Image (tube, rainbow, N blue to C red):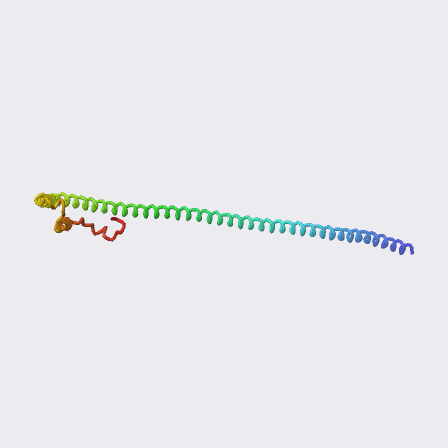
Length: 188
């Protein structure tokens, strides 16, 4: 019986040693599971945090690109509008300067033409006046001789006396107005 009891104690000791080792293994396995779970959760947290940071970085980068593109577009629009305004202003200035030159040139040509025809008209009138003086002087001498012959005509004017003046008035040439001045009403 003592062998049995030693055998049973031996079994009890072995079994208790084995149980103790098994409990240690289970305890270690549970601690390993808890450690693994903690590591997984912390890794998951790190991944989630880095993904959030990466997403935020991408969003910020996209926003910066969008803002940069909007600023570039705004800059190009402003530059284009400035250039367009300066081009339109320059073209308007050139157009008005060209129109002013054309009007000035036409006005100058018109004044030169009017001056030319005015000089022509003045020389023609002077020439005719000089030519007419000779004839009128002759007619005036005839009238004076006629008056001197008829001494009573100084006292009493004959009826044909005024007819002589009428002849003088009709024989005098009227000045001719150039054709470009005919339609002008405020000249004479």
